[in-house]
Image (tube, rainbow, N blue to C red):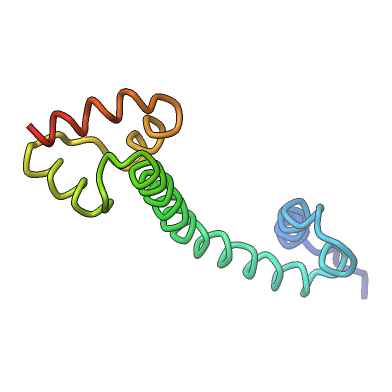
Length: 117
């Protein structure tokens, strides 16, 4: 019997997976089975950490706003500032407020004075 050469589809699939894992260390970038396991693990971690990143940044912004507010006696509590902003319909998100609090504190004073009035 003559030898039958296999097709290229499986090889193409493995090469694609190897390109994904080319920066991994050791067997994680060399052995096909461990490469597929590490690829799944990496994608699961990436998906999980996208949500975690949003949470972490929101916490960071809240901490920054709260620190500036308490230092300069604009407001005593962060939650009261946000609550009064919503009551006055000053809709600034926490990211923008944190940038204002760090870069331009006088602008934050103006915003808090608008809320107090």
